Image (cartoon, rainbow, N blue to C red; front, side, top):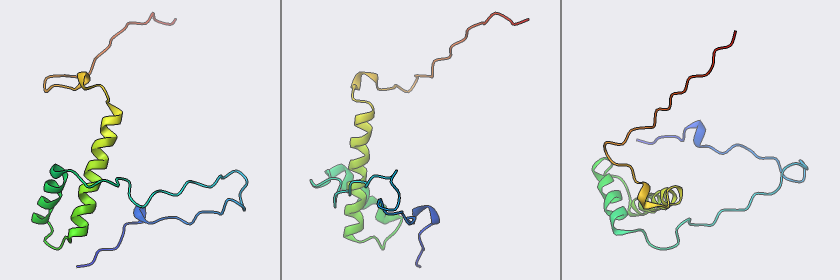
Length: 103
């Protein structure tokens, strides 16, 4: 069964920078976001996806594993301090303050 890309996944036509003086040319992305091979944990997780879709090729599994590693590196940049890892019982801070009433 073939599935078409959703509208949100298709690329929209972009004006050339010459036609719009406000737009600057965007840097072109590299061919691969992660040039080193994916981690063993990411490969194992990606290979487990074959239980859900037996038609996944080795290239698909490699792409999924690289995406898993890229997401893990992105998450590490968001929270570089390991001391702030949340525990199971942590809850959001609820702050209450009373403001003087307006009359």
